[in-house]
Length: 271
Image (tube, rainbow, N blue to C red; front, side, top):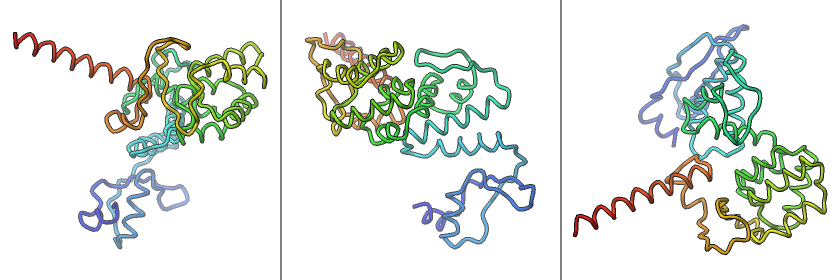
């Protein structure tokens, strides 16, 4: 599609490059446009040449890549981490910890300025880079939900391996509540084969198969008698692209509240 568009309209957004010390130029942003132009038979493309240091080049490259649609969670996580590290090296004021419960102003706030994600969400994405490859692949394949993965990312690699093996052997989805319990066991140095299995075995909501992986409503306590409605996350993705489960849930209920208020107003007018 890019090749056909370039054949018809040319390259509308210039490629960004920087001079190399040994001569020539290095493309910073626009690799796909350059490659598509070659396939389209173009001999020249518009280029903006800038004198950029490594960190400036990294930030421009990441911002360009983040505009792509359908980024995998692992790709977004690595991109955010690269940009955050570059901003830190540029002297942004930062704290050294990352957590799920909110952060003070720091480099992640700067990253958030150019994305649709909040600083808190960005830090949670970056936590995914602490996962072992097997678990990170499960996140990309939607066999491990985002919030559970963030909790497990705090475990040492050998304990993450244990969790992965248990998920595969038990063929059960890992809920957020289970992931939080496993994290607590790890912090108390009590995480073993038996305790991991007990976490899976004692939770009623662990019956879902990995292949189905419904998103769990973490606001409903375990073993509650309340009725639940399971809707696959895929149903929401076109309405709330690149959003976490928690953000989608919050936005979903805001929409419902607006609709409910509108319907009440209409009923009042009809009277």
